[in-house]
Image (tube, rainbow, N blue to C red; front, side):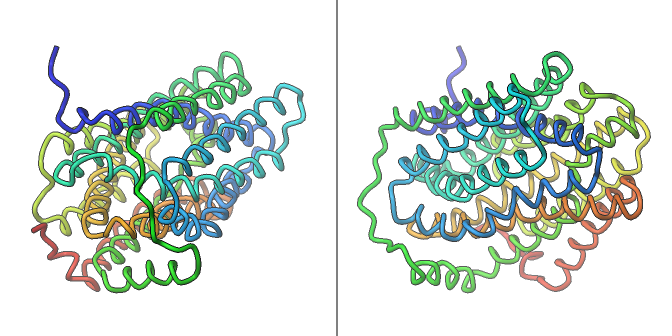
Length: 401
């Protein structure tokens, strides 16, 4: 048997990673089910786009508070609460669907509840991982964490699409609710225990985090770049329209479309986990955003299902390069006492961009066409990268020490 990679020899990190892969697979299945169920209810691109608003609104409202809490309490215990809440959301959707009382309003409401839990869960999880591995192994840990999430986003949509065609949405919600037990079990079995924390909960703690962000322009620039690139490139909620009306591949094809982008991302993440990050990290981030935008534009214009799959896979690979470099840079430059708050601020950017972008994509698709919405968004991603290179030369020249 081949030995485990060094980073996977750390028991707490390994268990948490495996639990997250299982749970994230269920969550990705659930998201496919929610989008498809909403599409069947409404047949409206605008209604699909609004789903992004209900996902991101609680994050915008509660994320900064979530980061403050993550720096003030035991992050492991906080995650136990948030994971249980997200499991309850899928349980409610399963019961409502089984009883025939599900509606667009219920879907929007449950997505908002899950978004509230995410606003507290993500900062706690991102701040917990660096405490479970040595700092010199952190880049590989972050690459594996991102790769595990991408593996889940490959398996989840593919399994979800097959289950949609076979049994409908209700079993998917049941599976997702059960999948959270994997993370909960990993957290309960974790040997790591948080030391007493001195960080207060209040506006002063929030101001401390914002002051650090102002003093660290390289982190701020990468967050803004990610926000605007994913805002214009966000179009995943239009996938049912591509699957049903444009490419005519049905729910099974929908699952493959959803899985294509994370498939490319998982391959890129595995490569990054096995080698050092590029020295010219700033330039690598900018070029990866350009590649992401070009791939999204090709997908929007494609009339071929195989080409669409390939374009989405390339987009996922490019996004992974950008994400891993940005996350590593942020974690290395941020003191542990501020990691929860930096994670919460980053969450507003990396979740706000694509989720608000879904709303923008839905509006543009309704005003013009879905193809125009996606293709124009991809080209605007390229423009964002070019503009950032011009106005922030410090990022373009940034090299790791």
